[in-house]
Amino acid sequence: MNRIYFEPQIMSLPTGAEMAAEVAQPMPGAAEALGHLADSYELVVLGNPPRRVLDAFEVPIRATSDLPAEPAFGSWLITDDPSSCLQRPPGLKTILIGPRRPVTNKPAPRCDVEARDLNAAVVEILTREAMA
Image (cartoon, rainbow, N blue to C red; front, side):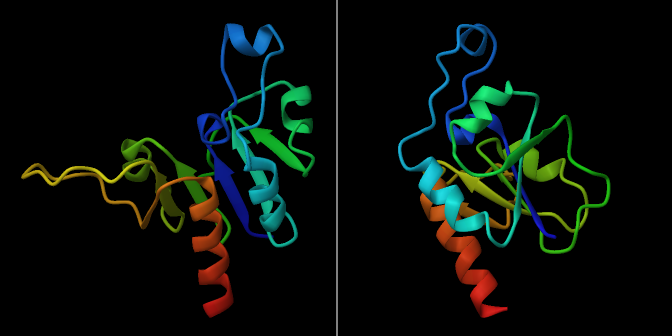
């Protein structure tokens, strides 16, 4: 099964002391957006958030410490860090979440797709899946 890997901050999963204090909350709309992907993809968050944090999304999400060296064909990484696009394993498609970057003369890391938020990233994935 294809996988979608997420960095924790994409879903507004706090890290460090906030997780320990059990104040983790899904970003508004994140659970619904991920629900649209759960039937076709295995959802995997990078890092090791507590199980109670993952359960808050009400869709099956597992955690892993790192990206696989050889991801399944058709898998995605959703990130808000442009450098993650450079460090991805071959064959993994990437979506960069966040505001459009200003035009500069400096070369920027190249991600496959840019989206304004998690909902737009989900629509992009589902659209590409439907067109395949």
